[in-house]
Length: 236
Ligand code: ADP
Ligand code: 5GP
Image 1 (cartoon, rainbow, N blue to C red):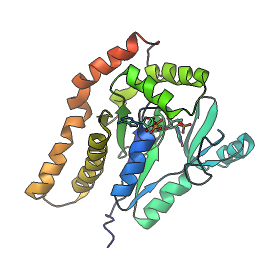
Image 2: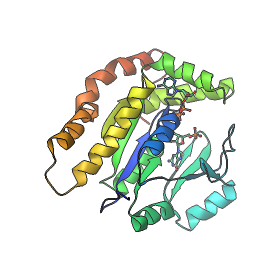
Image 3: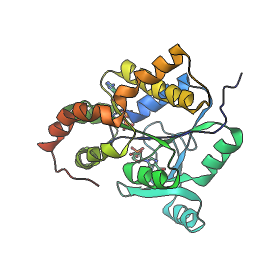
Image 4: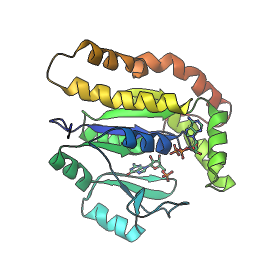
């Protein structure tokens, strides 16, 4: 039976590359019903086992620019020298089907969405520290060394944008992180209900409160510090 609720929610997830965002998003989509993943358009070539219309729609720069001219994107940005964009169509479809929508986008895109859709729920994923991020990027073995270095430098800038998000999720132990992410989606769905919550429901909402920005600031400080020595910092 469908559990779709009246007003579709839009979840934005951002993270420095290598933090584990794709891993977490894939797990989340297995666990939660009525949640669509917005497949972005990109001009970057596919990596590893990526397939067109699965992780992304892989298109040429010319086609991307045509879509920009035709105002087909809700937001788009240049990330690592390639264009990435969220098609308006995905939001329209989610609204029509009464399904919630998950956007995996960078901090520039998140800022654009937050302006256009102020009710969107934003989640920033952080690695436990800089060394772990570096290790995960290498472990993934998808990028050349110079790309890994570029991703690390970009990460050291991007992390400072954590305070523009509603929730902060430090992806340390995978199982625990998946549980928290699922908890955030379920808690936000409960908060949307126009009725008093049961004791169990209130407990679920309360359980993710520790990841709210105002409650996570202190936990983020050592993570930021680990990046300070490693590469240049500053807001993007
Ligand atoms: P992103 O999508 O943020 O760029 P990925 O999901 O590709 O990152 O994860 C980068 C690497 O780190 C992958 O090899 C993934 O399996 C691994 N990884 C993700 N989360 C964890 C975790 N909590 N603990 C250990 N390894 C992880
Ligand atoms: P990757 O090339 O590693 O898949 O993604 C690089 C970055 O682009 C990630 O931070 C990812 O969240 C971001 N990204 C993916 N799709 C979009 C999109 O549609 N819009 C924006 N602004 N960023 C995106």
